[in-house]
Structure formats: C-alpha cells, structure tokens
Amino acid sequence: MSVKVRWALVALVLVVAGTIALWPRTDEAPKAAPSPPPVKTDLPTCSRQGVALATVQGVTATCLADGQNADVAQVFAGPVLVNVWATWCAPCQEELPVLAQYAAKPGAIPVVTVAVESEQATAIAMLTNLKVRVPSLLDQDGSVKRALKPTRLPASYLIDAQGLVNFINDPPVFHSVADVEKAVGQ
Image (cartoon, rainbow, N blue to C red; front, side):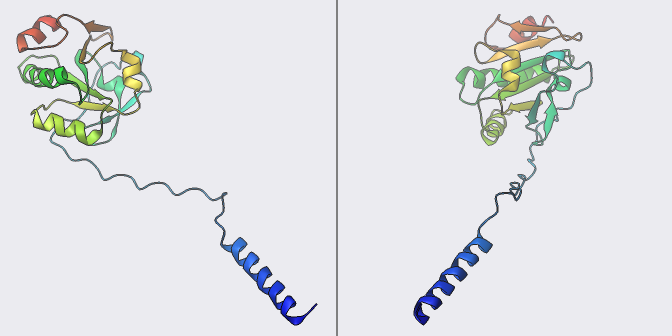
C-alpha cells in the first residue's frame, strides 16, 4: 500500500468516526415543546361546585378564561345550561349573546358554553366581539362533543342537579331571553 492510500484510509476512518460520534441518538428523549404562555381573558372561570356529571367523567377541556384544563364533569355539575357552538356557525353567533343576557339575570340557571371544531384564539375573539361573558370551554379533542352527541349546532342541554341531561329541541336556536326561560322552565 502506498503512503497516499494509507493516509486516505486514515482520513476516511476519521470522517466515519466523527460522523458516528456526532450522529443524533434516537434513544434520547425528545425535548418537550415549550408550554404556551397562560391565556388572559376577561371571561369568568370554569370552576363550579356540585355533583359531577357521570357521563363525562374523566373528560377534560380547555377553560377559555385561563387556558387551563378543566374537569368537564365538575363544570357540568347541575343545574346548568350547556350550549355547544362553533366559531363558523352563524346561528351560534346569534344565540350566544342571548344566552349571556339570560345568564346575567338574577335567578338564572348558570350557563356554560363549549366551543367545538374551533381554534382557541378564534373562540376567545368571537366571545369578546359578541360581549359574551359566561364560563366557556374549548373541546380541542372532540371528547365533550362525543359525550353529548349534538346533532346540530348550536345545541343546548339542560343538566339538572341529579345529572339528568335533557337536550333542548324547542326552540332549536334561542332568539330571545324569553326563549331560554321557556326552555329551562322558569
């Protein structure tokens, strides 16, 4: 072997050894994505007290007030009026302010809204623009929607103190506070 060939082999071995030494390891744990900064809104908290709703045990959703995970079973502790909506839903945009007006009345049953098939920032912006200030969840993974099984949007449910869930079909969309009062039996 000539001297040039030997040095070429040494250089090749050094390049291969350097490549192996610098090659990323697959056994290393991937670095977690940095957590998003906390969301600050003027929405009320999603925290509620009462008997937790059994049909959504173990289900969590994002509270739009602070961006934290909320126990849906506890948030839906009755009596409560739950409204499922989406940012792309025109009738939802009409109904949400009516629900907020109802919720602001003395003696009203608490109202909780659940945004589905929507992005967090868009949902917060819509509630802000509509001046809706009720506890609101974001169902990012669809688990709340799967549990409630709405057939259309918007969809409202009256959950009583014993955890009985009643789908409100009349009217299909609330156009006035009187519609909401009639539906909840006040």
